[in-house]
Length: 286
Ligand SMILES: [Zn+2]
Image 1: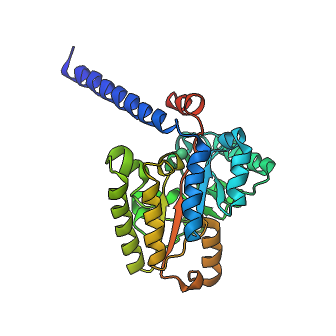
Image 2: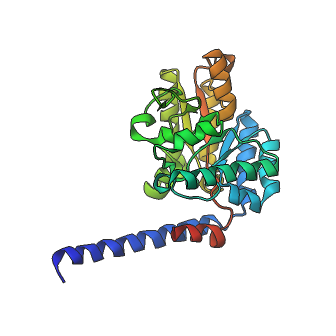
Image 3: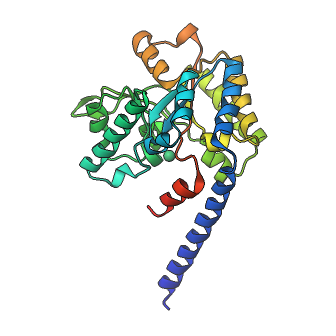
């Protein structure tokens, strides 16, 4: 066996181990019923009069319609995270369109009019923004994850045919819960410190921050206190924490934050799947 092929074999094994340990970690998280996770989140948010936006896979939403309706009835927002959790970046325009359109129709059947979108894995190609316009989305919450957009502290537009997009893009903070928990292995207390620093920074530049906190992680008993500290500290600083649609509409109309808040904090977290075996595992074979 040549050196190169030995190295390739080593890489494949490493990748195998990573996938297995990540899958085991996710399996453990999925032992908590999803309703318990969202209830933990609601308890915290209600206490501080703050709101959350859940980009949700429409196929998943169909599996528990009443939970999805409860989220909206509590004043939070459901956005589209596609119909299936697929990689838009590698799909032809027609297939992307099919997925996006089916997601919108699926939510409509549930009685929810989605106005925001975040592509799975935050992966887009040059066709995706055109589709976001075609389907009249108000905002996109994934284009803002690109390294050149992440550090921005205000809403922005992308260029389409040499003009600004009709929809608004939002920078997505680098410190996602995947990074803090899965990669950096931080506990709740250390996560809170990271969030506080981000909030201090956001307040000092008078801007906007959007957090990416998946209910499957942040809703767990083990991590929920980091969300609580985030909103406690953020509201102490005078920050406004509405749903994404409310923030975008308000900003577009007034070019300021509600109650002249010194900054706006957006709490978002994708709902990819409710259960491990049927949904999560099927994605590994993508
Ligand atoms: Zn996702």
